[in-house]
Length: 260
Image 1 (tube, rainbow, N blue to C red):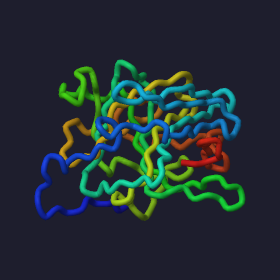
Image 2: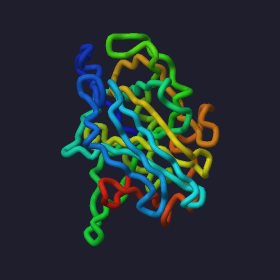
Image 3: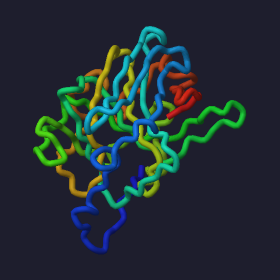
């Protein structure tokens, strides 16, 4: 599968051009623009929240696997209007996390380059390709203290080719690449992965920054069922039939049925 390459630069970028803050620091998080995308639309009981927490945000809630027979998922996605980033000059993203206010569960960072189209009959948002990376806080590395980063933070760097394409919750071989020049959406998600995790969850994220000069170590994708080990498909195992409806995990956002 071909991967989108960064735009060639005729001249070296200066220090400011090598980094673009997507969330956090002076850019903020604008929590009011984020919306829940949980399994409640199909009878589940999982629930998520994204709340302001000091200099960052707290993604928290409850991942329930009882209501759907072992399945469960919850996520928050940025539903801000006219969302758009040209990330083609950069080589990946750095994510900074507060491990003291986070658990050891397996989480997924999702990028999208398409606005979710609505079904003309139902008004619900249709599925499109997602680009996903799984991670756990336990495998993040401590950050060097700085004015923008407290001494107790950890983080990781993810190059673009670590994000793997999925469709309706399953890994897929998409013939095209993520359009880095037109990234339109970001989501943070937690899944049950065959019932391998459940219960209350908490992840405090400080910043998400696109960069061409990473200051943090690259992180291999975590594997569902054993999230502390390296290797495996970044999308994790395919969801069980109970985690899908016709192979399609369905989410709800802002009171309307939707999909990631």
